[in-house]
Image 1: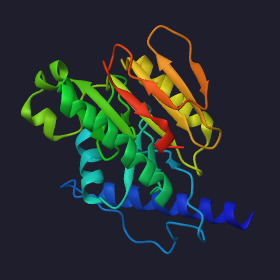
Image 2: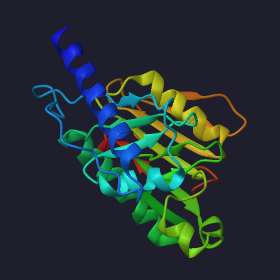
Image 3: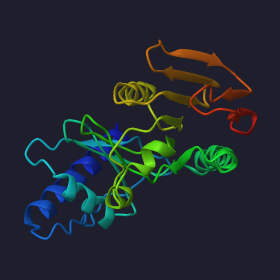
Length: 235
């Protein structure tokens, strides 16, 4: 109960800070003010915090500035305009995510079919949401079609391929909803890797979700030709 009250207090603190600094800022230099609430409760990494923004909708430029001016935090935004503050991952999850990105980047360096992005990259989906998958890939054709300005900001498209790695603090249902949202906005192939249960949920365009139990590897199929993710290094 004490942990729940502390989480609610932190959520309220962040919301008040965002509303205050955004409303008073004319130059869009929005930076969250320090509050007495700690980013972690004891040694437990919290789940993402969702902040309802009914009374104040940020423009794309304001949201971008908010992210740039608070680089110690990781933000996402729902298609309704609500903010989601993502907590930092624990060491083990971070190391596994680095391994995933390394394997994906190594394959892409060999075949040079597109561009690889890590979890620090923001994507502006067609439905208006802003998301940052743990790993993402887009085809070279889509990347070269973007302007230089579009490449420098949040990428204004949905990745062809995404990976979400479930951390111990993540609830499964929001991740599954996020994977479905990727599909609805154009993702062709997505993997939700659940290390706790050693399962992978595979999402494909026009098909039902497939659950694979304890696989040793995954194929990139026709989206990522010749790519094979070695999961023995991830479990």
